[in-house]
Length: 171
Image (cartoon, rainbow, N blue to C red):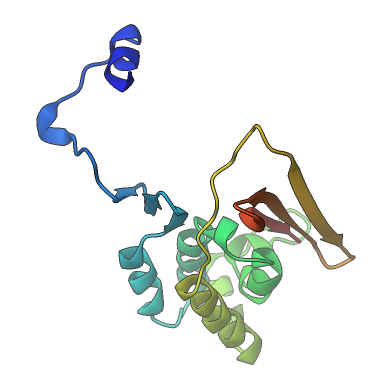
């Protein structure tokens, strides 16, 4: 049936690039299996070995990398807030962008940034396996909002228990 669908869509498969009957498949930084979707251990190892940022640009690179996995980390934006507050775009006031030299001079890595940095790394190293969406079943959305930010968790009952489908947050 799968091959028929490919034919109907006029898609061609290259046998040298195909793997069949695999229990797990690495796909775009994720591991996909019958259990669900999880983070790629190789990418998580890169995060765990990430050196402490020494400039606003290095903070941007770290947030960009771990931000790709934000759906695995509950309250991601709240945890990352001390880091995003020292990123270059956070330093724009009244339409005047600071130069790189001014940004570097204003850069301060405090205990708040260190805590956020290590917390994100810890959460990513123990990220949950997210469930697959089953559109034939209802969803349950839990939200929480305050003056500091917004958080949400999308659940679905699967196999008799609530499975996290995705986390979302913003500040």
